[in-house]
Image 1 (cartoon, one colour):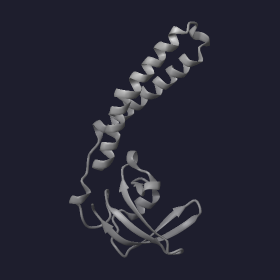
Image 2 (cartoon, helix red, strand yellow; image 1 turned 60 degrees about the vertical axis):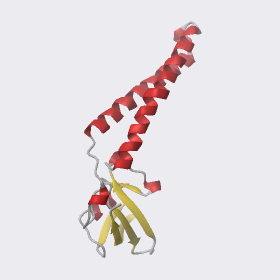
Image 3 (cartoon, helix red, strand yellow; image 1 turned 90 degrees about the vertical axis):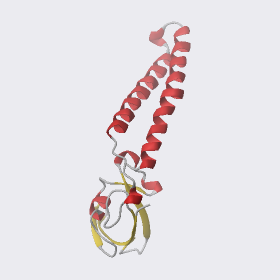
Image 4 (tube, helix red, strand yellow; image 1 turned 30 degrees about the vertical axis):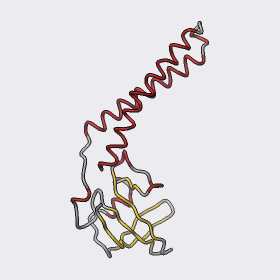
Amino acid sequence: MTRAGFTALDEELKTLKSVERPAVIRAIAEAREHGDLSENAEYHAAREKQSFIEGRIKELEGMLSLADVIDPSKLSGAVKFGATVTIVDEDSDEERTYQIVGEAEADIERGLLNIRSPLARALIGKDEGDSVEVKTPGGTKSYEILTIRYV
């Protein structure tokens, strides 16, 4: 996991523990004051939200406790975890830049590519100028690696 990914997950965990958890506890207490719990939709909704929050807290604590934080700026060479890779689609000449990151921090819209994705797996171990083929639902796509940076 990158330092940025670790920090983002840690911030989410702190928010869940210090803001979300106390808010849902207050909501449950308020709903209990309304009487009959068997037909109290507010109570059931608050309990469901509490269950989600507690599950997410456990999930984040597990991820963070097992996380191995990598500093990409200390890496170099062929594509590996943490690399920022600019590729060009050999059919459409469309350029894209992705950073290869861990599963928990992946966000394709922000250019953060899951290391387990078919594209990332194809890029790992390749150098600038290499071509890779990736099987997609729409067929096989070919990309050329333009640049590899570690920032």
